[in-house]
Image 1 (cartoon, helix red, strand yellow):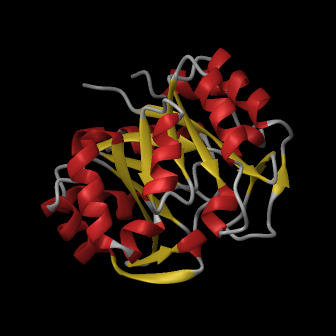
Image 2: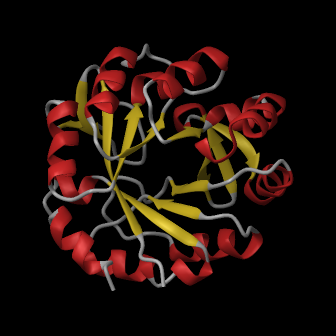
Image 3: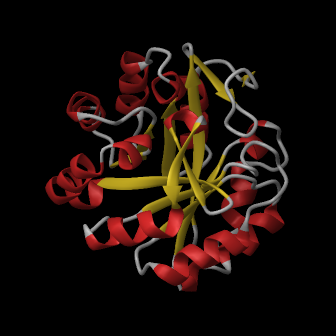
Length: 241
């Protein structure tokens, strides 16, 4: 059985690595240099890095040069997220050499553009589905963006290769992941799902890894690592089977 992929997160705001609670602007705790954090995860054995430009996601500027520097310094695979919603931001993201780009808000506000991007770039594109209940939330989690399952059906029909599913109510809270939401999404798509939000313990990671046969491919881990709930080495061991 394939093992759960772990993606340690580096969220960048105003040039610093930060973590938010519930994805809300103003709730951040700073953890210093994004490059140092990324290199630390790489040296701890990560195979993926989840790199987010929070300023771009919230529409408060961007950290494009810094994001490109971090992505360029990595020997591991990078998934890039945050504010990628038009040709210019997509081009800048792909130019970093990242393995995958997550579209978020753009998928909700400009569906025709997303369909075109999926057709052009295939599995380099994942769509982030940020959920409260069954409602999607757009632009840095401050707007409603329609029904989760209707959007999933549309994206599936357009050939979307992968979904990154975040339960906003759980994100940054260390309260445990929403396993029911992950199961529900896996039940309606045969595309791989990456889980995000709420991971607080090795037990949470083991619980998510039990969903691998149902279609969960990976888990993004942020605050638990920064809060030292466990080490990345321990996490990788926990999901190794």
